Image 1 (cartoon, each protein chain N blue to C red):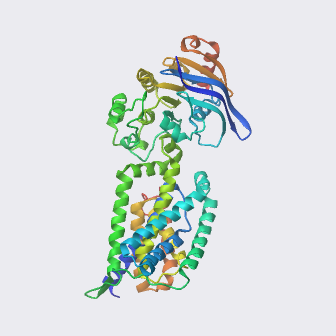
Image 2: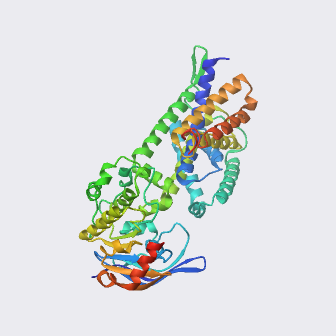
Image 3: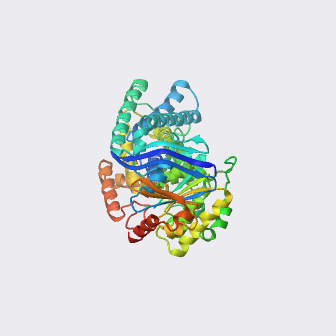
Length: 288
Length: 242
């Protein structure tokens, strides 16, 4: 086994997982909501970037911006449709509606982009770097850099800005936040838009690592679920650590045992962690 | 005294049950009205309905006017922005945020007739909060939470303050401190609807008293008139027995 290569693979995978999951982390933490269309929103992010670059001929930075805007739009439309359910915190209906949205997005994408796989080449993905016996692409470094910057910025916004304070107020007690003059509906809209933007950005940045298909999305939801639960509901730092842990585990388990059993093994680890620390990695020992 | 807050034909139902029915209630500028009554009399239901707020899902009818403007159709957060502030019973601060963060959300330019309280003014009113400014809300005592809840409301430049049981669970000395602070706010022209079970303490700071029983106003008068009223004594003693 090439140890250095596996560490690098794990780091890249881990940062990819963390970036894919961060939108759901905030959605669950602030609005106590889930979105099972998350994976299809990731797929849309990747395909919008591909379309902007391959069909329209615009550069990658503009493709990223367009993907983010598309994610915001999808998140906004979803929240507009489900606002009543959101305010009532009707989680069962929200699960079903978002699952349905996922299928709708899949259908729309199949019509718009076709069902054949596409390669999302970016200026970074074509840069190959060989260092000793380790190989990586410019896109791998870009994923790590964007994820680290994104998490630091998000932590700062949540901890230091008015926007972050309002989000934390709604996260703790939306009824009490209303009495502080907070328009909780707008916060919910903002959180859904953020989730859409973040996962679409992940699609446009992580997508280039593999061929993209309109049928993808299910694996991303499973990864997101894993990362969010392992990290501790709503914990930004916990999600980052959980994504990193899952990435390193996947890389090493795949190299040492078999890639075929990585997901069941990862879930066994998740179960063990949750038994020992019910609140996830970010919680104090014993839960909470 | 001209009316700042006027409530007409207010009815609150939970399911099919009528929990509150108040024909008319008028709160003047700079006036403090004490709303007293036993457990389940509808005191919290009254202030919650006026604020348009509830942790449940009641059906509310009737009109609420603030400064001559009908705000009945406004959602709660808009009523807050108009200057109608409720400090609820129970959970009234954000436990995961520091005292300073709890006080951070304010209105800088609330318009004519409303006093925007700065954080420093809140600390001057409640010096204990200044000492605890870096502590989380969850680390505060009951009295400190009440002070912070009131302080948080003052930051939003209230015209009328609806206080729900600010003395509940507090030591007698703290009850006097909190209620005296409420009384002091009157000097700044603030109007207060004060829900209290501690009638003896409340009657010392209020201008008028409403006695609620089974969701209806059964007695109303000035503090001086009500101080020795037998029905008030009965309600007070009832509260003490509970």
